[in-house]
Amino acid sequence: MVGHLKHKGFFTKELMDWNRTENDREMPWKKVRDPYKIWLSEIILQQTRVEQGRSYYNSFLSQFPDIHSLAKSNDADVFKLWEGLGYYSRCKNLIHTARFISQNLQGRFPDSYESLLELKGVGPYTAAAIASFAYDIPHAVVDGNVVRVLARFFGIDSSFQDQTGKAMFQELAQALLDKNNPAEYNQAIMDFGATICKPKGALCSDCPLSKKCQALLTDRVYELPFKSKAKTKKTRWMFYIVAKYGNEVLIRLRTEKDIWQNLHEFILFESPSDLEPTEILESEKISSICKKPYILVHVSERFQHILTHQTLNMRFICIEMKQKPKSEKYHFEKWNRLKKIAFPKAILRFLENYPLR
Image 1 (tube, rainbow, N blue to C red):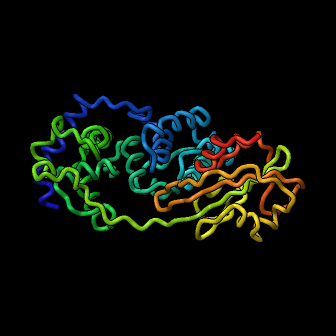
Image 2 (cartoon, one colour; image 1 turned 180 degrees about the vertical axis):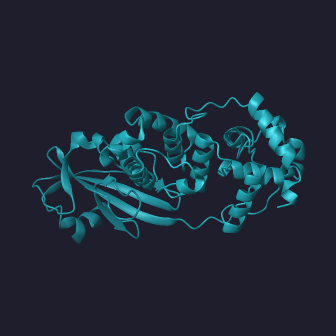
Image 3 (cartoon, rainbow, N blue to C red; image 1 turned 90 degrees about the horizontal axis):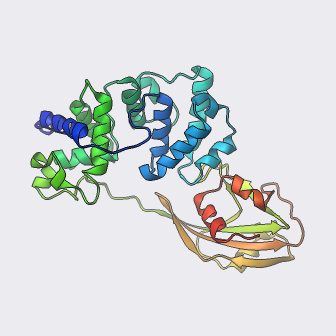
C-alpha cells in the first residue's frame, strides 16, 4: 500500500484539475443532491451501460418522481417499466427498498454510509455514491472505471474479483479521495475512467496522468486491470410453446429463484440438449397441457441469448389450439395485452420478430 501512495498528491491534483477544466461529460443525474434520484440512478446503472440507463432513469422519474410514488406503485407496473434492463433482482430490491423507506423511514433516506448499506440491494459502491453525492460524506466509490484507473496508474496486478484485491483497491481509493470535495472527486474519477482511461481505445496521449502511469511506462495498458479466469458458463436449452386459443395465449409468472423471476413466459420445456419440435410437443409435460387436435403454425429459428453466467439456446413453437386447455400453472391472456405485461428480453425479441395475430 505504501508503494501505491508514492504519487498520491500528483494523482489527486491532476485528476481534479482535469475535472474542472476538461471534463464535459453530461448525465441527467450528475451534480444531483437528492438521495432518491442518486439511488435510482445507481440501481439502474448496476450492470447497465450509461447510454441505456439514461432513458430508463428519465422514464422512472417521470412516472415515479419521488420515493412515495414508487412505493405505492403496482409491482407489475414497475417490472414493465424495467423491462429490457435485465438483472431483474435489482427491480425487486428497488420496490422493496422504496416501500421500506416510505413506510418505515417516512420517506427519508439514511444519511450515513453504514445505514445505507443496510438497505436491500445497496452494496458498498452504491452506499458510497449516495453518501458522497447526497451528503458529502468522504467515502470513495469503487466501480469498474475506478479499478481500471487505479490498476493502470499504480501498476497493480491484484484482481478486484477476490476479497484481498477488493479490500486493497478500496483502501487505496479511500486514501486518494479528496476529503474536502468527495462528491466532485468521485464523479471525476468515474468520468475519467469512462472517457480517458477506457477499456479499449484509451486516450493515453490526452491523459494528464500519463507521465507517471505505470501501465503506460511498462507497456501494459491493456493488460490491466488483471482479471481472474472467468467461470465456465452454464448452457441451457429452453423451448417455449406459444399455445394460442382464439385471441388468447397461455402464459405464467416466473416465481422460482432463477433468471427472470417476477417476469412472464409462455409454456416452458427445458432440456439438457437440443430437441426437435415434434419431440417436445409429444412429451408428457407438454401433451398434458396442449392436447390434440391443434395446428402447428410456426417454429422459430434456434437462437442464443447470452447472460453473464449462462448461455440460453432458445426456440419458440407456436400452435393454434382447437379446444381450450386447462392448467393450474398457466393462465390465458389476450394477445393484444401482451405488450402491457413484463417479459424477459429474449421473449420480447420473439414477439417483435414473430408477431402472430
